[in-house]
Length: 196
Image 1 (cartoon, rainbow, N blue to C red):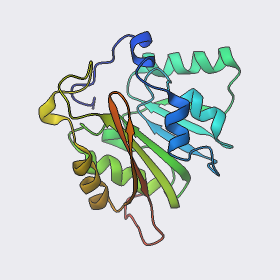
Image 2: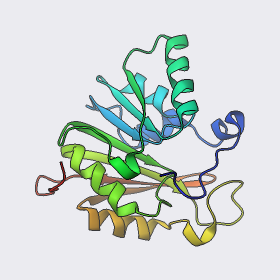
Image 3: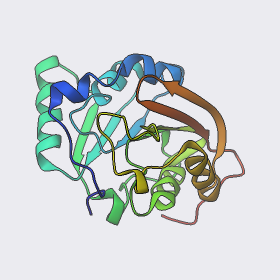
Image 4: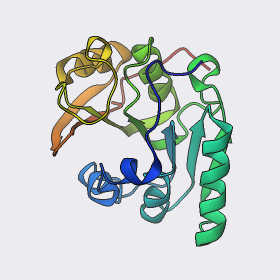
């Protein structure tokens, strides 16, 4: 199931919206993170940067075969060996990863999905206790050059509420100027999920 209102701009435009390294380091993903999963890898904007920060494997999931093919090609071209890119409808079928197996998860520009709490709950399931969930989304501002329709674009407080419903504890909020905000969540030792 594709995320609603999820068309990607051309790659050059998309890459220009982010300083991937600065964003990932703001979330602390360079510090003690072995394995990381990215829900919706797109062009690999964050995938390849994350691969250089973590000590283990980056699992990059996307429903679009062309995006996964592109990420794999970039990894081959750059000699990146610790990315496992996979075509997967994680919204309908989950991530396919084992429970309590990941140190961090990325949900970037994706929580306008019809079932945001379910996506966050899947992230909770696969994160180790103490694991981090990093969220970024478009600011709630119709002047942004891209982003989903305003009626489905979540504000930070809404994402925090969804995170709590999923079982996360909010750690910090970020302003990723000019177009995005970020939220860092933690899976506490008492967080649990029945899903397998």
